[in-house]
Amino acid sequence: MTTKHTLGPWELMLGNYGRNKVCASYGCINGLSALFTIADVRVPGDSERGYTDDAFNPEVAAANARLIVEAPTLYEALTGLIYGADETTKERARARAISAIARVEGQQ
Image (cartoon, rainbow, N blue to C red; front, top):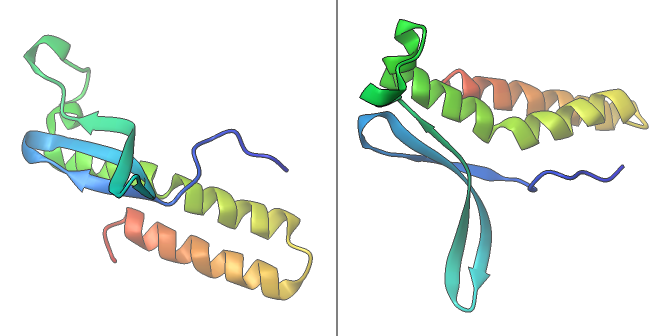
């Protein structure tokens, strides 16, 4: 199976005023750490009013960013649970999923 998304792990870079970035890190390129933005997750500005009060809550923006950050891990865990060849593979995938869910929920 070939994926077309940017490979993980992805990192959360918390900013001020509900401005958060989800980035992929590719280690060092020419001696510099390379971070590539996957998503900007932020509280909308005055000109971008949403339809719910949650759209203006920095905590909601941070929670959304945590969910996006864990997408590659959750994808890998889900494919391991579905396509895993043996019970050991499936149990490792289940453990990764539980850990990722805890991070999404802010428990780790």
